[in-house]
Amino acid sequence: MNQERLLRVLIAPHLSEKSTLAADGAGQHVFRVAVDADKREIKHAVEALFEVKVARVQVLNCKGKVKRFGARLGRRNAWKKAVVRLQPGHDIDFTGAES
Image (cartoon, rainbow, N blue to C red; front, side, top):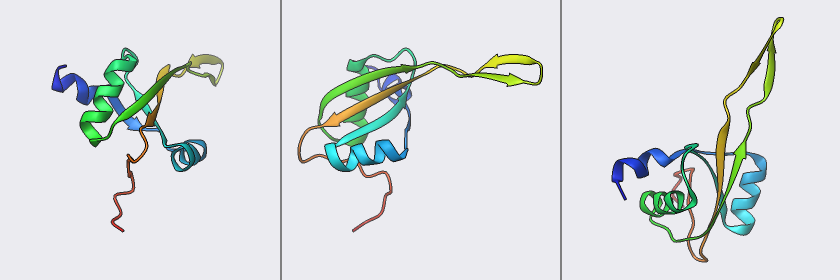
C-alpha cells in the first residue's frame, strides 16, 4: 500500500468521554478517518503509524447536522469514524507522557 495514502487515511483521534472509557476498558481507540477509507486501509494505517497489532475495525458514517444560519439552512460536512480494537498487550498512548 502507498505510504502517502496511509498517512492520509487517519485524520485525527476522536477524543471524547465515551472513546476514553472504551480505550481504558476494552482496548478500543476511535479515529476520525477519510470518507473514502475502507477497513483494510484503516487497519494498515494504524499498524504502520503506531506499531501495534489491530484485531478488529468497525466503521461508522456520521451524517452532517443541519444548522440554521439566520433564515438559511445549512449542513455540516459528513465524516467517517473508525473504532479500532487492538490485540491484547498492545496500546496507543495519545498523551505522550512518560511513566
